[in-house]
Image (cartoon, rainbow, N blue to C red; front, top):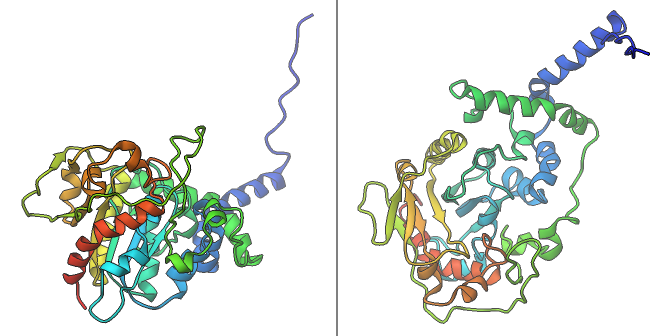
Length: 364
């Protein structure tokens, strides 16, 4: 007996059905235009929260606070753990009083997210020195939180027709979450709870740490290996100050130039971040942090990054921690990328002199 497949059903059951589908598709495609008109920045930041960790801190510091800063530490999760601000205030002082510094950072690589954070920040506040993460880990994808806070009608290199592939991708992502943002403007998300996020469970007081996450946690090699016990530790060697690699100046000893190219996202956003800082009277600098698995005194710098004309403050594992074993270096980290409280305190001591020098170059 020969099998006969059932007759194919029509995709649409009439004109009305087709009209509904066309209307729904049009609403999704045009939603970035609609949400730009009806969704407030605060709603966007709160809806974004699950993508970046608790965003109450981001919302208040970027959108609501108006007090100026001397130093703004900005960027990915490595910048989140980069600096103990209490330790930094002991070594770095502003001309007009105690140092005003804080961190506004988020999980994942995201120069697109950093650009939008900074653009919104400068509407309400000013910073003399902005320090972002050096691109040693290439950003190849859009930050998962950026599509929630990006809006049409504002300058954004990710929506520039000069970069059509990036613009199409970004617009498509905005369209996909458009209905969610529209719904959030009707049913307000309210203040996002700070429970359920790893950083908040372990270290809940961002006001006290000024946005830094500096956990008392031992090193963990990978997600399946056990975490080592934590012990407060200071390297017995006096730290060497981080070096400043200035555009146009001779390279300091121990710095090696490489040919690593910038990714399309980095090429679009890093010059835009520099321009945004210049427009708002802020000096921009890159911070190159050593990893727990790094060894030796050398520092590798991409010639393409150096060509951006932005000073780079950098430290090698040896200059930061001294001549100690790899196991002792790991006592400053809770994984191979992120500093723990030991490392964040050490980092403030190492990078403090360079930050002080750059701060002196800024306008008062």
